[in-house]
Image (cartoon, rainbow, N blue to C red; front, side, top):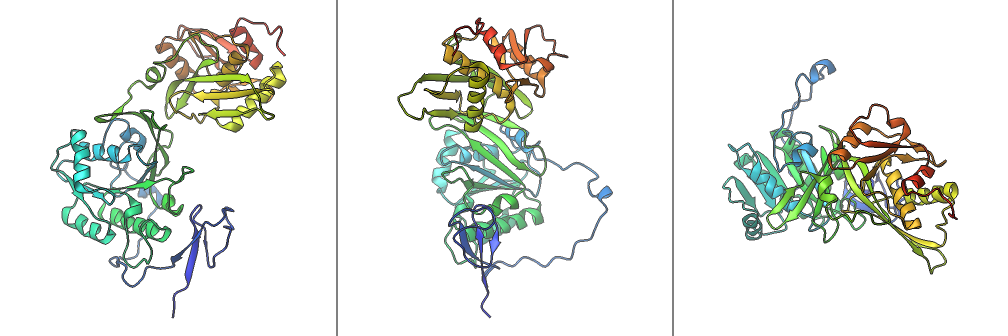
Length: 456
């Protein structure tokens, strides 16, 4: 009897029994792809395993998960302390962002030297990988290169080599026997990932998969791929900028709050050990439209520069351009400043940029963005030694945020002597700096030395 074909959405992973123009789960158009409901005759068959036995939850985790330190500095922190044996990790990012470089450096710095590291290259020849390794100063006999696109062939080599870690670059180039579709297709990516997951869990060998992203920043292939793996790491960076950000968007063995910053150099990725000072190095203090925000990325406070520019618009609908700030958040802050302070942005183009290509994801940025907008609108600079943090509500109130003492301590360490912060966060902060409690966005006018006269 002919096996029924199934269809699933490449955006959300929802599976249906027939093709439809629009996914019923997420609403995406033309995202359903056909795939066999089960592997074909030529598919690799796993060894039969006895059924699992139930265990009480009290005794299931008697000791913490062991970790394999991998380096470079920052990668271990994002992973939660290192690779967990038997874990399946997905590293995604745009082409040329530095994924292969990072993993090659990781392979060379693995501390478990009694076993080799297997680097599977489906996109580049061993000569190409070796040229990159030479540029990075890597000449280890423990790093083994395998030019292979057959998943079954790689699994056979894993059994022979018994590596400490396996790197697959990339999952979109691999194929699984019995799946009648091209490499990189939805069904192939799903089958390949499932086979590597079985190998990782059965042998206790961590496997790192490299995944490409689509033009809208999503991991190419089925969304099921992200659900299947244990850890999802994303590498981000602005084109032409040397800064690279590594964060975990999913981690079954640790937090997703950590962030690592790297600088792309001719000799590879170098950890940025003092990100705040590095990001503020080229700042022009005393320029209108510039504000320093004290945000929290991961577990550490981080100082970033927010720049704003407002100019008279020649368009019927003035432009609103935001980089590093959510457009919806910018629209909210503009509405609050216009309604509560009477600043007329309706006939002006507004541009906001977070320097360095960062995109902080916490509300503590609001006060600095608002201050930069007010400074740009009035063409008056903020004090050079001022740093700000706080959330702004629709009523114009400045609301408290978490970890205020750590934020003030980081700003003071970099020489900022005046800190504008929510009034409720003032208690318990004592770092020898001048604290400027803010209760309302109108208080920002006092930072500019203006009482608000003539604004309209």
